[in-house]
Picture 1 (spheres, rainbow, N blue to C red):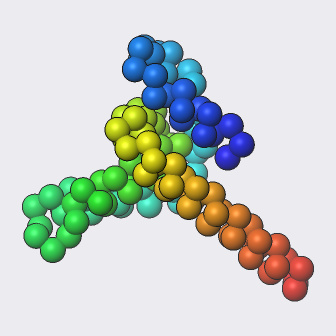
Picture 2: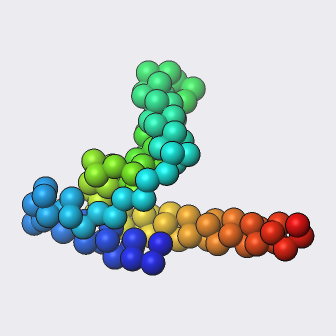
Length: 113
């Protein structure tokens, strides 16, 4: 969270080589995030053929969720960040606010116990 934004901004450099980019990504392995990300990618693939699911939205959410889990997802997210930087900034700010709320709730529950 602290250096994550700077690391993802470094990924947006188009002149960075594949190995150089892999060195800048900080992976934060998390089984629940991997499960959620892969589930969103699966729903996205279904959504590409089923008319009632928004396939692109689920694919984008899956890559967003997996960006700290896999190098390939971080590369795709860097492309998205280069293409739509203001939207990515808003999305990452929303994620940070949600994490802060979750930590606050966790602290409240610990104090009650």
